[in-house]
Length: 443
Image 1 (tube, helix red, strand yellow):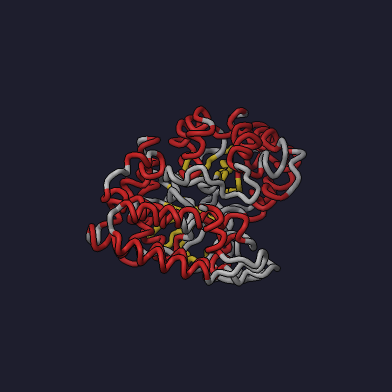
Image 2: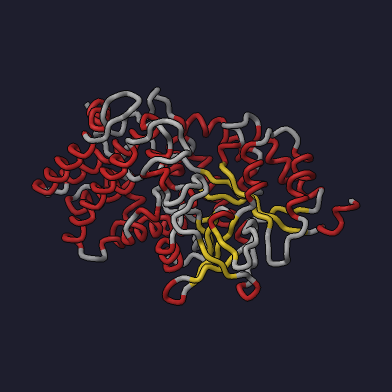
């Protein structure tokens, strides 16, 4: 082995981020409406190209992963055996997530609690255990979000290294870092290695031995005893973005990395001694997919896109206003602890909408829908045509459930305001409005 002898037995963590937005609504009146501009079901396509091949080579038993419930709900219908494989592997290799994919710092604290606890509840139902670590959507973080994670029982969270500041100014890659929180709590940031994660995502998937020798091994050199080489990237890289890359990843994990003395372990096997970890601070309101601060990619304009994104701010406002209005109704109906009720019914509202058949449960389903309408995908892209229809459809589902709740006056008022707000969202590409798009979708 030669130069590899000094690192024999070194453990590494390789993680995959599995996510697809909810492409179809749950309400029976609109469940058949496609949200894709071309009418394609991308979850089915990506399952065939990526998720199923990864499972067939056993990657779920070799790599750590986060898998969002919005994807698992679709897999339960598209490929139940594949969903079962995720459930089986999650206890050892899986980490937690907030059920759906909103930008958490842009939610109220009660809304943060709802989606975080809904994710914990479902993870516990699947595995019988509480998740140790958490994947924030887009790794978007701020201190209030981390406080909520700590209160929900999370030990740590995954993020990009540029989101964590070390006291000595050193890079944060692969450096578990204690983040002190208000009230005396703390939580561990687990920044991934930026160089490896980026190259796993974007380099050609041709030679796994080369990748282990020339990329993984050099990045491992010089790591301190309290550091762990951590790589994390989109699962869709392997088979969807790069054809047949499932075989590359399988060989990398099974053969190439052990050959250079690096052994992939599940992230849940990490032994983190807080006494030996450095303390640091997060950079507030940052994410792995936008370097421009204040999470502006999702609610405004930044140089992530060259196209006109002036539609994003009013679009984001319209959906946020809808969600806040539903919260006020819930607060009046159930009191300040309404978040506990909604989190308990989050899975049922999505998986078994036929059970949300009373006025009280319809109101809960309205809140689940208004939160789902805040899925980050809608404003991630430069064009609202890519994923914006998902949020519009769930906003409309919110109105349907509000009407079923029997609150006629409140429902009419909220509907009028939403339509007014959406009519102010002008799409620069099609010259239409968000309201016109919604009306065309639902007829």
